[in-house]
Length: 218
Image (cartoon, rainbow, N blue to C red; front, side, top):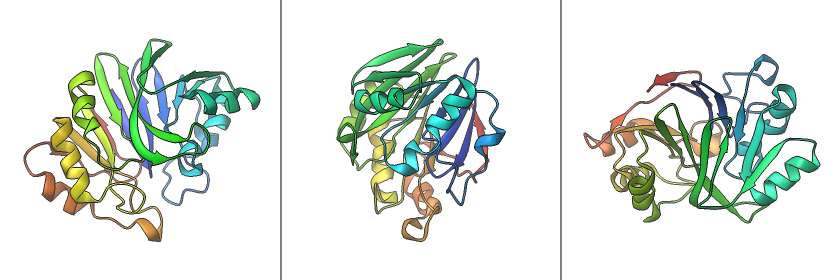
């Protein structure tokens, strides 16, 4: 499995299927991919409907025929915009084309649905946790226990979600072996330090700091 950080909170996961998470590309000054260059997608999963996460989801689904997956209320909006969608709730799991997508708690606002979510992607024997936008919460211990992610992508911007110090505590609660910091450096208001995060995590987890367009293999 290859996972590419596209900048901000956007991921592209490539294995037996191609999955995009929070594909905010248009208007993202750090984006490493353009919508017009996307030729394949099977699933587009979104943590919440803020514009820097919903992003280009509908356009990608229309272009590729991918299934959109998100909270029920956001999925209804997708369907109203002529997008094939699977709506769900926190704690639920859906299977789309052999990819298991689960939504887990996140502490952050949202328009439709009222709350943000974290996203669990299980595919090809590997499990990826994308925390979306969230503050630190004790639920992360349960997420680690129940889903056993092989890798976590955690926001560290310190204004709209966790500071590096709190994100390092999240790594401890998750007991996850590998972690990548995301959601920082995109705009002047969220200039956080992945170096500080890596130092705070120490040896408890293998931290990989990616540049937009950089990838990690599982």
